[in-house]
Length: 327
Ligand code: NAP
Ligand code: GLV
Image (cartoon, protein in one colour):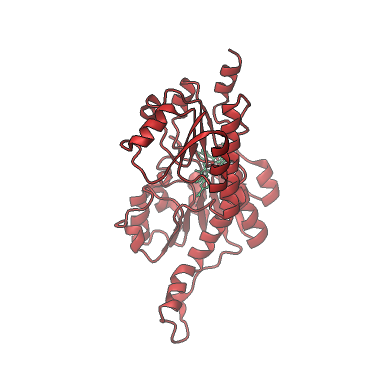
């Protein structure tokens, strides 16, 4: 069987797959013009990878495809309806990355509030030559209000760290109320506007969907406190980036910590890169050695199950499995 592997499949996993399948691996190529990619797509039984835009057009060029295995929990890169229509399974890697992403979100909260990258630069560039004044101070994290938008697996893990580790008061907004989080972290459900008005830190960790696209824009930044810090660990498309830039420049909010951007890798002329009160990361929330390996392993298990007639553990479109097996 033939497998198309695309970016970010860890080497030990790629090598293990190569023992049993005919695997072509692609990185940094143009998926619309690379002849090897186009040929491999034509023959592929399965795709494994991170962020490949699986659109109707791509599927038209992949007539043998049975499964697409994402090496990520987010699957906004997949046209799930189109995959389902064509009886192609889709899978993701939930759960195993939850703690790693939550650690990073707390890192962004601390880094922005205590201005860690900015002050690191201050020390290393030789500017620390006299005692500090208040212009170098940050703001406290402990005992502040953290508003989490998207109280799912990662949202809960962020709340756990913030509440039990930093004595933060947890506000949250999701499509549904979460009684367990209310009990475990004393979390309070808020509608979106109230959360934005009341939180000292606003942390966005929803999937990117039709409903969450551009969820946080000009109006939402204006609702936030002038002292609020905004953290985005979800996807770049859940906010209106130009509105964030305006809010930061107009001092409508204090600072932002960002792991995700509208365009990735980020455009070097993006104004966010010029603002001192922004901490940027290269979409690295789940990227510890341990977790990346586990994600690749889980994605490979999903793929191999699907190719060998076993139910993949993380099916996004279970209808396809039912249809294939009730034929
Ligand atoms: P999850 O368990 O499915 O949680 C998602 C949460 O978002 C759920 O609580 C859901 O609410 C909420 N939500 C969905 N649509 C919403 C809406 N329209 N308004 C308000 N809340 C909404 O997923 P997860 O494992 O925590 O992952 C969440 C996302 O994080 C991923 O999809 C991905 O985009 C992002 N992520 C980023 C990184 C990174 O490296 N930066 C790494 C991993 C994941 P209900 O429960 O009420 O439905
Ligand atoms: C990473 O961004 C993921 O969705 O797993």
